Length: 317
Image 1 (cartoon, rainbow, N blue to C red):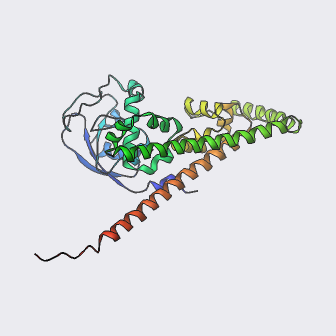
Image 2 (image 1 turned 30 degrees about the vertical axis):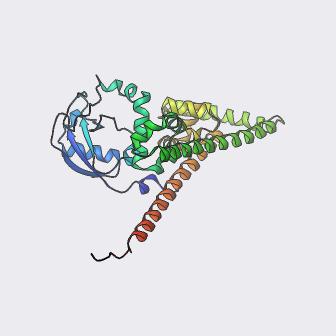
Image 3 (image 1 turned 120 degrees about the vertical axis):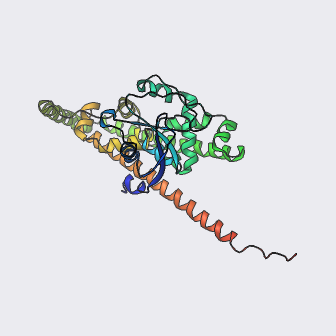
């Protein structure tokens, strides 16, 4: 399995400035966290004012997702906000009104608004259309539900191409649903086997072993999950949770200690390993799809350049 670091290792040139400042500074980073560190150094932000938050200078969109950052175009302008700063309107980067917020505690509510959400997703696709395979099911549905004319304007594409894009998004969503239904049929078959008693007996033994392990974990005071409540809810309630999670969430699940995950979900170790394995396979598949799409794009670009090189001879006047 190729790590996400290998895919995201290219340095992305960016422009940074402080809030209410007009002076921009250039920096290049391969990840969002690296850009934050360089912003603190270049902009000379005091350690006591960290952690900082990076927002788009164009419209104030908060950038706190690694996949979103990687899909942004080169030379994107960022504003670094310290922990004690609040966002206010400024015309430093043009006439576009920036996002206004009273405190960073409310930024999740602002970003979760429907209008802002689909525009953020559209910008992500505009930077790299191969990122479709990295989107969660909820994000795919949001883009499908957007009026074609609005999405076309945001993507700077023709309505015909935008409709093709929405059809592709629907196909990706349908494929994940088909995969979920196939796995549900398999689960029904396994449930039929459980009625014979052998699997139930093994499950009872596993639960007893799990209780003993959980008691040991409690005695050591470790084993708490670091996953968000949203991810835990998807893992517990969805029949095929790996299809409903974003690539970033899938990576977090694969890195989560099995003991902590078993404790948080009240699962036996076998079920935890099965879900972690499914998440790892899904993450690998999505990364491979991204590589394939990028390869096809590069091949297409080379073919176009070759067909345009010869040219027809110019007629003398």
